[in-house]
Image 1: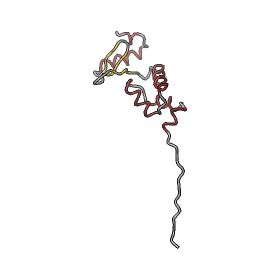
Image 2 (image 1 turned 45 degrees about the horizontal axis):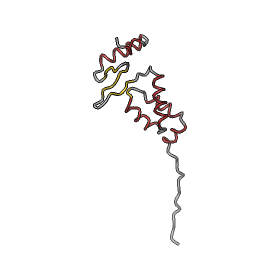
Image 3 (image 1 turned 60 degrees about the horizontal axis):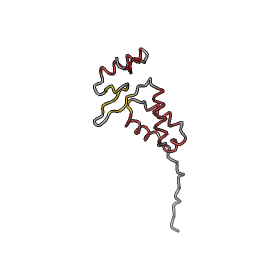
Image 4 (image 1 turned 180 degrees about the vertical axis):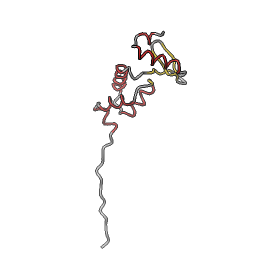
Length: 117
């Protein structure tokens, strides 16, 4: 068995083994499972790898505080399988990022009708 499977608990081993048997678009690269893209490979991350997911989001967030939508686009370019909920939750707690996703509300301006006398 590959090294990536040897250190996991039984349930995680079964998930990964089944996944690799059925996934033709994935490959093992060292200890990482990667998604094959036309021009490169991107790292596949599983939901139970929460510590790794947190580390990835923190690293990407440290580069630029760009809000949820742009952060998801940035992470999708490099990683596969990170749930959007994790990204949204992390970015929501970041003060610098929260400014990018909320549009400032502008007060309504009421126009007074001008009438001829």
